[in-house]
Length: 128
Image (cartoon, rainbow, N blue to C red; front, side, top):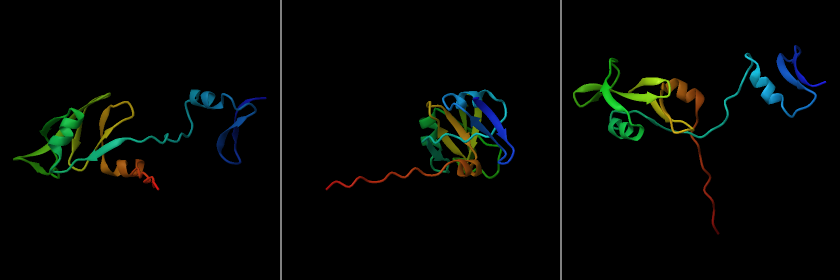
């Protein structure tokens, strides 16, 4: 017998029998717990000094922000209007702008970014 089965003792869906296609079968289910794959992305946090650089990097348009906490950029509170795969989105001061795995850009609030990502640290190779 092969397939997926629910183990009430551990409260999880588990593979029974063959392991060759259990992941594909699990992805066909509508409900389950899934872990985000570890991927490395490029991101920058908006500050009062980098709006222009970030706008050029991601092709965004600098626009006025409606939020008081946004730092002044010139004489107005600035935000970035970013074209995403889901439409236009706004990145405000303190938000992160992320370049995804397919080169797409999108904004992310700081608290969500910190829960979802950690800095990528590269070990230096010692050459003797």
